[in-house]
Length: 204
Image (cartoon, rainbow, N blue to C red; front, side, top):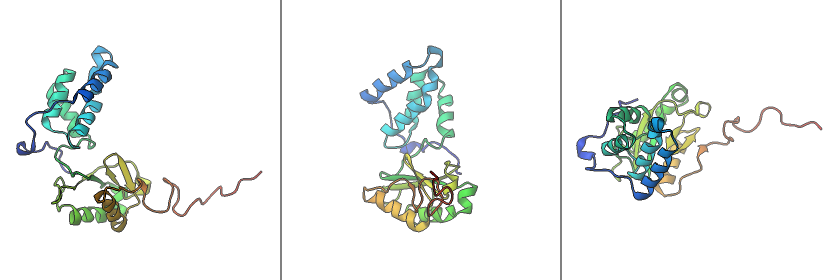
């Protein structure tokens, strides 16, 4: 997994401020915590800032959240750089692909998914495709090991991938019609491929 650093200065916006709607939401959220525990709102505030700012989290947004919560900037930066859910540089307009690269996914072919990203999006992670629609990175475990290999795109996982069906997933995002999340083969959630193997009949 690559080092998680903020985007370079030339890609950073000059300022960030929550919209009135998001600011009202933030005030309600912060008020749910006792006065000495309001820093616990840091993750949802960063998440909302990322959603507002084209799917990625700039430095000014991190500073803004730190100020709102009375936290040292470095403490909020630690949170933003620790969790891969926070995207620290500009991402594709239609999809940012996070490819799981841990052992179960590697053993079941994540290298083919990474190659597909390199061939179709950009040779290097954290770069936006020429058309501006896609970006990708390799991350640690995304929690769907039994359906490996898999990726996270925005808030949804796409599992049981091959280079072929992964490209179909990207085709769906390119066309504005993303496929149904979850397994991309004939299985229900984490059930066996091909259907049930036990408890097929119910005795009266």
